[in-house]
Image 1 (cartoon, rainbow, N blue to C red):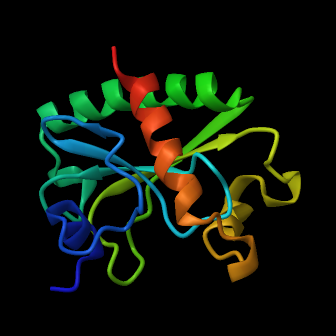
Image 2 (cartoon, helix red, strand yellow):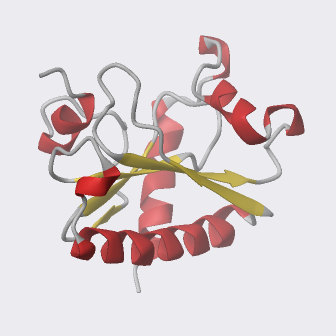
Length: 147
């Protein structure tokens, strides 16, 4: 099985250059990478699962609590005017259930709102945020999510 989320969760090949932002019983919060938008985070299920209808009630309940805390942290850190949350989990290597949580903040270009937001994950190399900027950002978001 080629699952990049499982590889990242295990530490074998991390997706984010920064530390895990939050670890719950069932979910992890990571900063997406590569991206050209600071604060693009993902909530990733710890176990491998490819269908939302297979999530347990406990996994759904924790997911809701994490989404609320993460949105509040993004608002605090970036002063976001809106946050997007979505799950497709259909890209090759990324069928593992994960939710993108994207803040619309001052660096957000309205040309990429809505479904066009994926521009930030497919940005040209010169627009990608350097790993050295992601590392402290993860620490800041982790602190903002700590109760």
